[in-house]
Image 1 (spheres, rainbow, N blue to C red):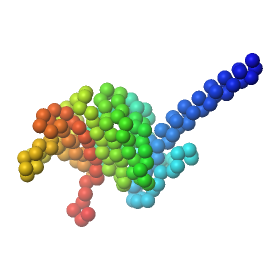
Image 2 (spheres, rainbow, N blue to C red):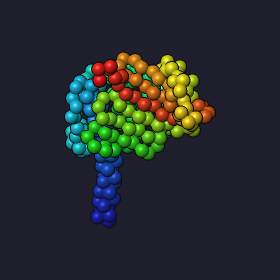
Image 3 (cartoon, helix red, strand yellow):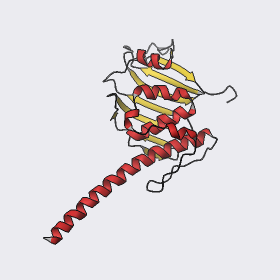
Image 4 (cartoon, helix red, strand yellow):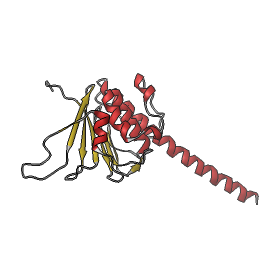
Length: 210
């Protein structure tokens, strides 16, 4: 009987330990991505995320104080609003995506999340891609529930590109642009109906000399 009780206690401890390790790894990935982007914005081109299981790095930038600390902060409206704060806002987006996605590192400074996730505001992200370099993020949105382009324009002040068909007349959806504080956002909609936002793309504004 004592042996059985000991086995039950050991099994329970193992499950708790496993859950703790999983949670720590997710928090670690989010912190690592934010560090990579912060370092990149300061001119570091070769930062590599540490291997999961090592001590998470400390973010020294003052932007760390405003990084999202919970999944509830990660909403579509914030994902549209944060990048326009500048590079520090893009760090918020990357860290927030690390909170909600099970991110996979493709190679140093390249991360992807491919499994759809439901946000606190009930909208669903279909994928994300982060890196390389600072402020380069792609986010996909499911059409149900539908996040309207009109609401995206209200939040960002984006302007619609008048061109939304190819030279052969193929409709590829409307694209809206907003730029502020060195960061550009492109917001793409469904073709033909233009009813829903299907993707958000964040990138640095290129200088003429680049």
